Length: 364
Ligand code: PLP
Ligand code: COI
Image (cartoon, rainbow, N blue to C red):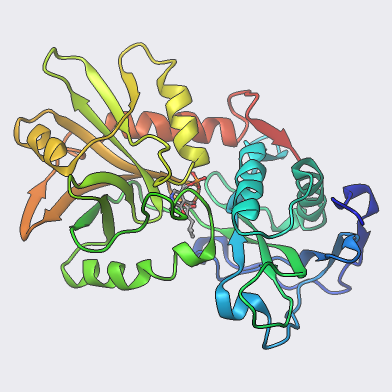
């Protein structure tokens, strides 16, 4: 049985008539799909089959498929960027492959050679190259997904699975410049816990957050600030990692983000901000625990300079307000236009669009 598929075996069946491309100024995240998809089947008997690139179509799965009952599913989120030079690039896709494989292992879904999937994704993007926006800010979102399709209702590892990748153009998260968000620091619900799935990109982590996000919206906030435990450690913001720039008592600037302690998704954007920040002379980067009390103490002492979320979709997302225990706290993030947040944004975008050469980009 094949323990991995090979990109060299890919069967490509191109559509005869592609769909019309949407107006690049009217893209809603995840609502438009490119013409083709990649599918690869796995069975315990035969191992991995051949990758197939074919016109996007509905999946046919049995109503007993494990994914429909027990959320035997994982996904990834990455983008292809068309540079000013016309070249299409991926950004640190090796980190997505690594995270996909670690989630597959934790979910007892079949594993594979991540380099082979990366090569298949490059082929898929090449086939739909016309769908990668010619734009300074729009991109092609790529959604690799792995589901357990075996049609039996036992709670067990699936003996049949399907890996698929769909893509679609997405607009800039902030078409008219940074739009800061406010957060509800919820003291009851939690996104992740020790021994749980928080460090993995399993679909089952996301469904339960929708209710809590609704509570946040009812209180005039856009997203949830996820806290953990009696000490109320800050963990993540909505579906993003979180960063806080704090002036310490000696006057230096510390960029704090929670450590990868099992409660935090190892974000590609998070890692990139840490790596870039460590090359800057004017800040120190700390991966350390931080409680909501410490954050609000810094805010009250005027030492909290900026706070932002970080993820593939938005890159960075400034935070301007936190609601906690019925009180609203205005943060200084936007007072001077969020210079630290903006600098991370600009450095990352310059790399993604090929304006600054970097080992982090991979040509498609
Ligand atoms: N945290 C969560 C819970 C996420 O779903 C994501 C997703 O994209 C991130 C953080 C950011 O990760 P990345 O930078 O790899 O997109
Ligand atoms: C991100 O890219 O930052 C996300 O959180 C993606 C989300 C749709 C799961």
